Length: 599
Image (tube, rainbow, N blue to C red; front, side, top):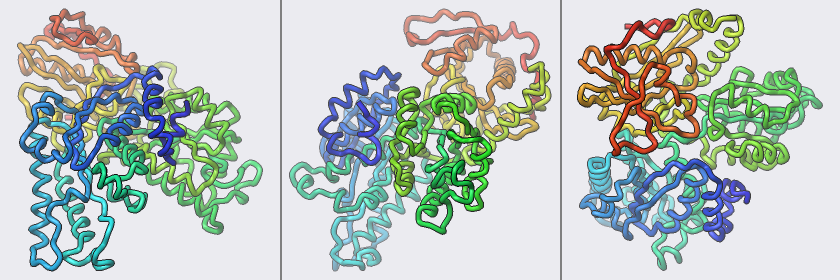
């Protein structure tokens, strides 16, 4: 069953609704490792079909969700006054599904009213809900903003007049932006953009509203659910990280090996060439936001580099972390790229105009996302943006520098080949680390790292910003971060250790490190710092925990390698957890030999 051709842009709405049960059975039968989550939907409108289709998109992307659905239009009551069923459900995420029809304080035509007071009243209702939900559940809250109303009684004046509904919606949406920008755990689901892109006449269905109180038509629910799912996945650190691109008829028109650099279609001298420029600009912007780029093309390497050197090309050789231009099967090259960049297959999107190449990669690398982009360059940008593969909930300095990190790592790999002894290579890097207690300026990056790291991650637990902030302010918790730099550049904040102190023991529930600094001995420097912290606090024992996942087998013996011994636990411990312990008094020499600690 070709699920991606149904669930991805352009969405096959009829097939999705007709085959939703069959699609769900297929997704559950694939044998993927699914992350279990609980999502509460608090609706100001009917939400049943939204939940059904959202469930498919989350399953498609590796999340098995259980849903709580509020009664119709009880979103405010459930938020403010509580609900025992919602309390016992204890959601991992809450979605407030309100629409323009739920706005209560619209200005009335002909009445003398203070517009700012009405906006304050409307906004105040939502602020009170966000605050109440955060205080009780301390989990991410996703909030729809508002689509424009279907009708404009004032015509064009509706946008600017103080009593215009379109004007009021715009001001409320802006007030949401300003208020939510101050909060770390509230996120906007931008249906104002989505409804505009799809068109209000497609968005609304008066018959469905009057008969069933659905605020949107069934026709747009797949787009709505996909858009929402990508935001939710991003909150949980499951966005894609690497875009692999073909060259001929993908980044430019024509075949550079046959047509020559001067013959490919790229630039504003033709409509087709201009479309390729627009597509390249979109990719360049993604790169600036931290998305890694790579090339996989059946080409001579020299021709590929020449094409990227075209005077009108927006993308050039330095924008790509890896370039594989040869005549090997593409799935083998993609596998090699993934290994070089050190990511999982499920973090990768592959763009190629050739359907045979797409099918090959889909069959051999099923976790790689391979959209059916067709062969019309005008559509490429829609496939890239409307599927929201690279959705972000925030952008840190590390994101803006990620392309440089990959470039620096490439230099390190090339430099490593000059050394016969790995220890000599590590010493030559002249590494320096900053290891310290988490400070407010780093909490967003720490949260991001916790929710994205899979391979060097002892427990794969995920925490949102509010939990991390709580840990950093608790005297019972220890939350350390590590930054690493060397002669090739700064890797940024790349490792986190979190633990709680109990009965003179430090119990570590998180230890993770970015794949870009693997095999640099930073974990040894972190361990030495842990020992120092334990000695200063009078802690006698460290207890480490390992929970196996499909991606973290590389650290299955991590604690054993550090000198830990098996730790016996009571029966209340998580069944999948393996515990290890280390007596602080048995510490010998420092384990870190190659990294200088910065004061």
